[in-house]
Image 1 (cartoon, rainbow, N blue to C red):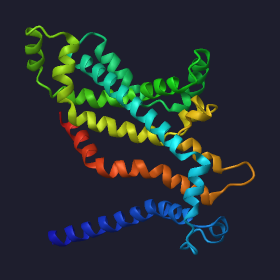
Image 2 (image 1 turned 90 degrees about the vertical axis):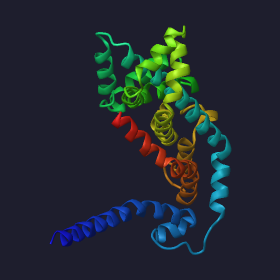
Image 3 (image 1 turned 90 degrees about the horizontal axis):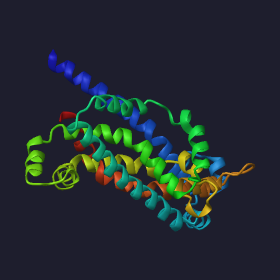
Image 4 (image 1 turned 180 degrees about the vertical axis):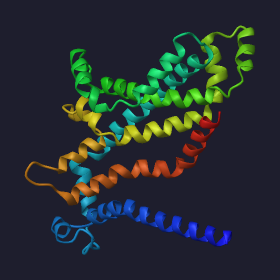
Amino acid sequence: MEERENVVSRTIKIVIGCILAVLYLVPIIMLLSAAFKTQKNIFKDIFGFPDPIVWTNFGEAMARMDYLRALFNSVFFTVISTILIIFFASMAAWVLVRYKTKMSNFIFTLFAISMLIPFQCVMLPMMSIMGKLNMLNPVGLIFAYVGFGSALSIMLFHGFIKGIPVELEESAMLDGCSMFGVYRQIVLPLLGPIVTTVGILNIMWIWNDYLLPSLVIGSNIEWRTLPLKTFYFFGQFSSRWDYASAALILSMLPIVIFYVFAQKKIIKGVVDGAVK
């Protein structure tokens, strides 16, 4: 009887999983189909197979959106912002764990609470302040990414650092190592698994972000990222869905490839941080 219940339960889970998979895949399939269709065929039958298959959509999309320049901008903002987030968040988490004061728990609680505040609530005040400080530029965008990405990163680092033996750091200090030296030579090398997780999570978020770059560098054409460039194909009175679909595929492809190779490390790093 118990074995039969297990089979029924497993079957129900498989059916639910298949339904959810179809729901998630349908938009992707529609996008792939539209990328190889003409504008006329898209409006005629969005779900149908491309007939004929149009390969020139990708070339036209790359030319119109200046793909290589936009790709460089996305890589630049993503890599620089992620490195700074890892550096500052890991140091902040280490100090909060190792150097306990009356304010340590309060500061950590503030970081946790900040994750509950929607970006839309601080969007207008932030833009006003950044405008007054003349930070509506690439540097300001990186600064904003570091600020918004630090809270979750600090929480992940915080949980992981608790599992690092404090005796290693004490021994280094007895040997005359400075505070920063202990962090750089002892703590940072031991943070490998969680550094990978934090890096991957921030890379995926920053790469796909549209709203923050549109607010900070929207008027700076030279520094527009791939998500901003795809907006070129949607006009006030008409939209080129054929080119836009191809552009969206080109924008998604690098991060999808990256995620496929990195997903195991994401799961491992999150589990390690939670256990420790």
